Amino acid sequence: MKKYLPYRAFILARKELFQYLTAPAFYGAAVFFLVFCSVWLFFFQQYFVADQATLRPYFSAFPLVFIMVIPVITMKSWAEERKTGTAEILLTMPFTEWDLVLGKFISALAVLSMMLVLTLPVPMTLMRLGNFDNGTVFCEYLGVFLLGASATALGLLLSSLSKNQAGSFLGSAVVLLAVMLVNQLTFTLNMPDALARLINFFSLAFHFESFSKGLIDSRDLAFFILSTCLFLFINTKVILFRKWR
Image (cartoon, rainbow, N blue to C red):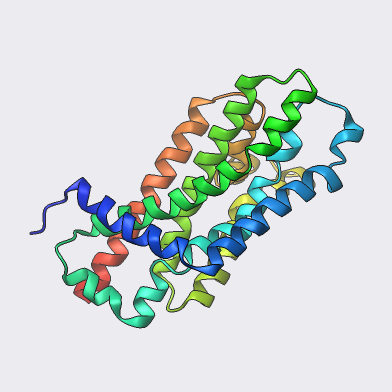
């Protein structure tokens, strides 16, 4: 029985990260991510007209843009391995299922983190123009990171269930659209409170709202951590099933 060793996941993550940085799709996704967030803030939200020292309008774009960006990041991880047949080679190497899943997750999350770092010039520039709460901005970035981690783990799971990149992208985009925006149903439809709470529980964007207000709610923090671990755990079971099928 293969033994799980943490350093092996980082070895695989380094290889995956190199592949990301040499792929044109990464740079296209990064440009789209930065442009979308900036256009959302300055054009759709009319930030300077509002004349408020808050970055909530900026961070409200992240759940939306993640619907398109994260599928681009994760679509190749497992689907391409399966299509080219290299998944079978990986499974015969001295890696456990957790090594493989965590390696791909770490590399994909590192790519997403690079994109988040590239957004820093916008808030750093705007914070010179008003009296912003640094603690609130930190909470917003923490929430975005946790939201991205959970969505990335979900995207990797869906990639492992897909046969090709196109199917992985479309499947991930549809599922992320649902889990990001399902909470909007509770605002537009007159639902019983119990049903509304149930729907909101499964919405990633709903659990991000407290962070966007500068609050670290332990319930939302636990939700993101546990949902990320759950998606990764299911991913290992999918890989194990494929291995012994």
